[in-house]
Image (cartoon, rainbow, N blue to C red):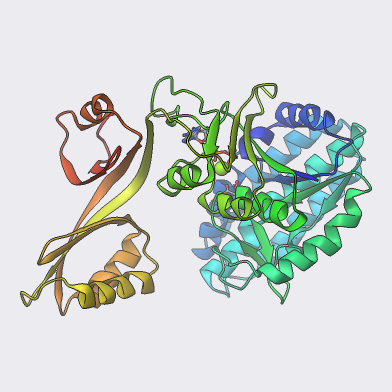
Length: 424
Ligand code: ADP
Ligand code: ASP
Ligand code: MG
């Protein structure tokens, strides 16, 4: 059994979906689960539908939703050429269900509504791709992932109920695999009360890893618009090179610090069962790609990872007490209470500096909480650069004349916080 994941870019239009069908055709006799994201930038578009709905801007809801409809209609018209095909009804019904929900004003929490509304992107894409596969002779079953990936009700960042998910996947998916391919949605889950949840933006890689873990997949492949994992993001650096082999530990380090190519939660389930993860190109499917697995003693080239949207908090004790272990524990408890993501820390006797994901609301609440004992200075608009396996030459190039707000060097790994506009 194998698991494939195709992201938004790989199914952004009809030609892309045809390309995916050609890739999958080579594997049609294998037992294959295919996890699919929303098409192109549909998730962003659905977020606009949600925020307009939340703000009670009815005409904007209609306008944003119409764009999503038009886009999917265009894809279908190019794939099916015949509006009698049952997929048109299926997609129509999906929009009708959504419109029912949008009929009344926003009556639930923002995060709950987010999951009910934004999840539609993956329902649409999987219905279309699955119908197209069947049309071109790839026998495929559409599976509702909300019956398999069972979660708590932490909307927008749901936690997996692993025992229940494992049981559901084994019971529901195994029989389907004998009938042909199985297509399901990435990013979504379901609660025990049958409400839809989501696993966090870019979460479809994680969905594929959950399936891989539960069915003990032979391997998992994620198909991307890049040849594999590269030494840097090609959108930010010229000519990065392909990394052929990557250990699980190295992959976790890279993705945790912002290498967008794989969602950071993806690696652990695979590592736990020693399932190899292949990162391959849907543009050049014959390419070797990157294999992530249990490798040690791999010689790595320098890798650069950029994490955007960072803020630096300098937290200084008001009463001239040391920032000692007891204070650390209180500070971290406060940071954790507000669900602020810490990426780098440093301390002196009186000050604690921490580089965090910049979520202004959460940070303001933290600053209020700490106000009685600490002065907190915030600098926003920063980015965190992580260089792994760097040489002095690479370090010097990145340092240049730049203003560095915080830095840390551990052997050949270095982390630097700098202005977001510094051109590297
Ligand atoms: P998906 O379509 O599966 O959602 P993403 O767009 O999230 O795929 O991820 C692929 C993108 O990740 C690439 O287009 C590339 O710009 C970016 N990326 C960031 N860091 C790296 C890296 N180290 N290697 C390859 N791609 C990277
Ligand atoms: N469609 C979701 C997103 O854009 C999940 C994913 O693509 O991984 O975040
Ligand atoms: Mg993505």
